[in-house]
Amino acid sequence: MRRYLITGGAGFIGSHLVSGLLLRGDFVTVIDDLSTGNWGNIASFESNEKFRAIIASADERLLMEREVSRHDFVYHLASAVGVKLIIERPVETVQRIVRTMDVLVDVCMRYRVPLLLTSTSEVYGKSDRVPFSEDNDITLGATSKRRWAYASAKMLDEFLALAHYYQTSLPVFIVRLFNTVGPKQTGQYGMVMPRFINAAIKNEPLEIYGDGNQQRCFCSVFDIVEALLKFDSTPQAIGQVINLGSNEEISIRQLAEKIIDIVKSKSKLKFISYEEAYGLGFDDMRRRVPDLTKAKRILNWQPKITLDEIITQIYNQIKKDKN
Ligand SMILES: NC(=O)c1ccc[n+]([C@@H]2O[C@H](COP(=O)([O-])OP(=O)(O)OC[C@H]3O[C@@H](n4cnc5c(N)ncnc54)[C@H](O)[C@@H]3O)[C@@H](O)[C@H]2O)c1
Image 1 (spheres, helix red, strand yellow):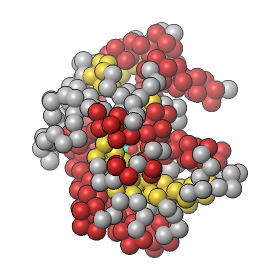
Image 2 (cartoon, rainbow, N blue to C red; image 1 turned 180 degrees about the horizontal axis):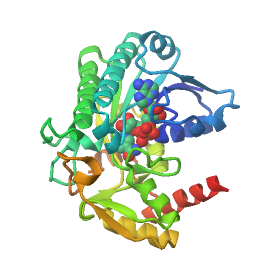
Image 3 (cartoon, rainbow, N blue to C red; image 1 turned 135 degrees about the vertical axis):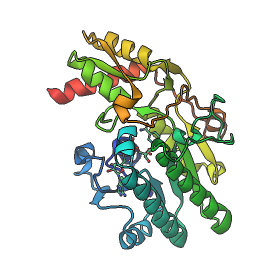
Image 4 (cartoon, helix red, strand yellow; image 1 turned 30 degrees about the horizontal axis):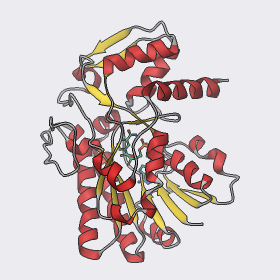
């Protein structure tokens, strides 16, 4: 039995990771301040004697000293997330991401506890060289465009992790997650999949930002968790940056149509300009596709769950929660 600490474990991906680790028989501690996460995501684990949760911020140094030193491995998922939140609360976004990582990497170094950082495909910025490969050069937008604050803060976290790997030999793992979706994800902070499915269930318009021709790849959280569970036993992944996601593209307009079809909804599509949705100065990328060669080679992983299956799972979960 191994002991895992998950920052951000009451969030969407974190709570599925808790489930995967407990199923494997491991001991799990979650540290989450519930800023975007929710107790309901982890409430069902409360009776499991191998599970603990601490409601606190992962940038509290004394707490992190105590907790990290008691664990064998740290998954760092705590972060400000969601384009809407990032545009509306840029100060908290940058400070939350950078401060937490700063504390965590120091403490992990002190107790020599391996650290996995969940970074993001946002760090590929405005690059149009798809698929995105981990060692590609990166072009970000201007600092006046607030969305790039998230990418820059996450990039700084990556630099910090890699700096420790080179300078102090801390075992670090960096995962660049592409759009991850599944049951329990909230649409509150701008995530497109839960927003669309909830609107379709209510027969309300599906609001598409921009012209809807921007393409994305959606990966099931269950596939992502399967990959995350492999890192601890994959020494070849130490000091590496690895993309995780799906490489099956779909336009946002096609996604909306697919959801209407699966949900058998009467909803219509409603197009909204980026300015109206996010205010002036918003930048978007047309395509975002991961190169998954490294994930396949190092982790022997590739996503398996189709988009239709993902939408059906989310839809069924929402229906179940409502009854
Ligand atoms: N979902 C995606 O598509 C996606 C894509 C790329 C990267 N990621 C990354 O994956 C991670 C998890 O994302 P998610 O989608 O589950 O989001 P989420 O908002 O559901 O989870 C983040 C969790 O971190 C908690 N948190 C934030 N700051 C904290 C702090 N200082 N201390 C303690 N807890 C804190 C929140 O309350 C929340 O529970 C994040 O690091 C995110 O950047 C997610």
